[in-house]
Length: 173
Image (cartoon, rainbow, N blue to C red; front, side, top):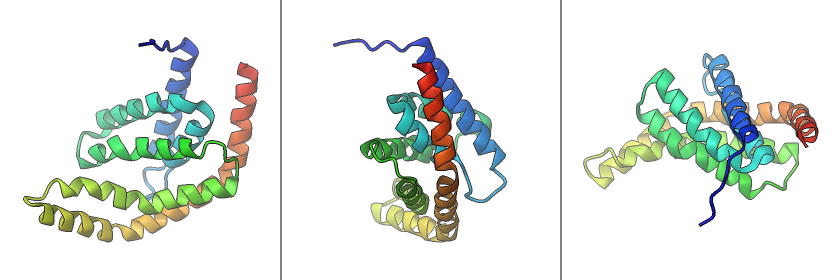
């Protein structure tokens, strides 16, 4: 089995990704379901490839250290990596509109994805499914805000931020 070495540049890149995600998460935390986490994970997965798979766990651990471990934290363990995996499947697409729709759909599905945890909390599978469904339905107004916010944020920021990232990557060689 071949060992993969991570360079100091990759470690710094992961640290910067985590810092950007965390600062933006905290800056927007007062707004219900308006966030830049999805935006950054999408762009970082597109432009920094597999490094995002190191950044996401670090981000999740930091979130747990800051805000405590609860059900939302368990949800993060699969929701954010799933987003990165989905992005990597479409990594050749460079359309602002495509990524705006993609990000918006992710925001709309966020509550449904996160409700999956509740399936395992019921005394029976039936009770767990009912609980997950009720939790998802109750959150639909927030999912609508989340989806619309993600769409607009990506539509506005995609081009200027990708230009900055591409310039940075060219300078790094």
